[in-house]
Each structure stands twice: as C-alpha cells, then as structure tokens.
Length: 311
Image (cartoon, rainbow, N blue to C red; front, side, top):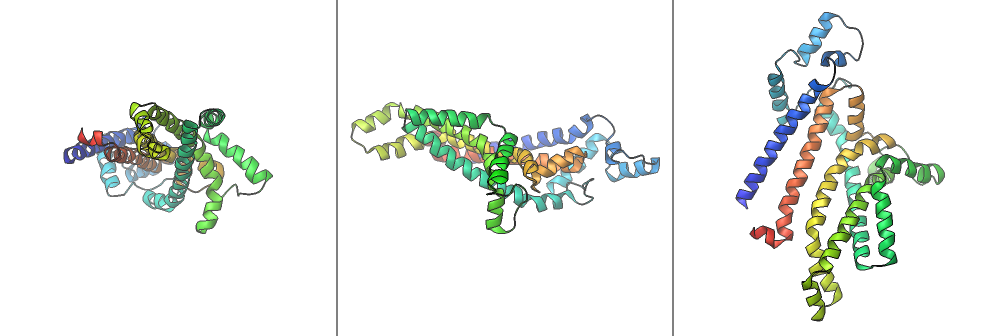
C-alpha cells in the first residue's frame, strides 16, 4: 500500500505540474499581447504599458514567469486580479463557500437519485425499468443551461416557489435559494449515475454466485445487499468520483444562469474581460479537484473490492 500511494502521489504531482504548465501557457496562445488585454482596450502611453508589463512580469522570459507563478501558487499567491484590483486568493476564498455548498447539495441529489433510480430499474424489470431508462436518458441529454431555464420558468416564474437569483443568507435561506441551481446542476449527472448503477447491478444479478445464494435459501434482501449491491460499488464509486469533480466545471453555467457569486461565475466573468490571473487560478483549482477525486477513488476501490487490495 505504501508503494501504491507513493506511485499515485508521484503521478499526482506530475499531472499537476503538466496541467499548471498548460494553464499558464494558455495566456500566450491567446491572440494579441497580454499587456493590451490588461489595458481593457483603452489607449495607454508607452510608460503605462511598460509599468503594466513590469507589474505582471511580462518582460521576463517565459520559463522565469512560469517558475515565479508556480512558486506563488504553491504558497497560495496567485497574483492580483486585473478586474477587481485585489488578490486572487482573497477573491477565491470569498466565493468558494457558495460553490462548495452548491456542489455538495447537487452531489447529494445525484447520489441519492442516481442510486435509488438505478437500483429500482435493475430490481424491477418491466414498466418501471422502461420509465427509468427513458427518464434518465432525457436527463442525461439535457444540458445544464436548458435545465436551469426550464426550472426558473416553471418553479420561479409560474409557481413562485423558489427564488431565481441570489445566494441566500443563513442555512435555511441558502438551501431555499440553491435548490433550483442544485437541481439543474444534478439533473444530467443523476441520470448518468442511475444508468451506471442499473447496468452494474444487472451484471451482478446475472452472476452464478447470486443464483447459488438464492438456491440455498438466502433471503432476497441479503442477496441484494451482500452479493449484488456491494459488488456493484466498484464502477459506481468510479463514476461518482468523476461526477463530483465534474460538478465544479458545470457550476460556471448554473451560477451564471442563477446569478450566484461563486467560483464558476467568477471564471466566466474573468474569461470575458481577459483577467488572466483569475482564470489561471480557477483552472488550476479545477485540475486539483479532478486529480484529488481520482486519487480518492483509487484509495476507496481496494476497500470495496478485496481482490484489488491483494493485487
């Protein structure tokens, strides 16, 4: 296990370094001079341009700039935002609670709805299975922004049950405000998890050891719990880890649609005004979440399947 962890951590570090280099290099792949972006299209004197280039170290060699940025990122210093004129780290910390609350809320909806619907479809073949398949197919094919528009039109405009904008204050008010955004964010991923759960459980139900357990008179609930559901958790946990990490990317659309002041909305506004320090910081954060989620899944898998632990 120690050697396994060492290999995974080494791969994690290599992935983060490669991703950080790609993120930082993306600034130089964009057309035009970064200094002209920083002036927001306004005419500026040569002295002002020189001051901007010196402030953001644009005159340094590319590798020097990258090493300085990586060194600052390791210590939590991502530079200053061009749009807001303040430290990027402070901006992220101020908006991170809203995004984490939204991702946690949506993740809970995804896990509960995906597992329940997938298990019902696998264990109740017939009309219920077909209804779940059709519903999850529609949910998987529905983009988040379409779901957001539909939920706002139905539950905010027509029924007036939920607010369409704002983060809310306090736990109860925030739950009320973030219910529609969480539902819009969870719809596609819940459908995906339900279909994966159904397929995995159907595969386990057809195995010989399940038939042997039933023939020996083991209660059906015990068969489902010990021999079907537990053995199905491998692919389910893999998809769940990827889905939860992908929620951070999908929040950009949902937060913009519902007017939430989170990380996703900050990323969209920063891309619009070419606020490179913020874009680099948020993109790096997303990469860290993806890599961390994959590492967590790799650590959980041996606990679920003893065969992987022996391997």
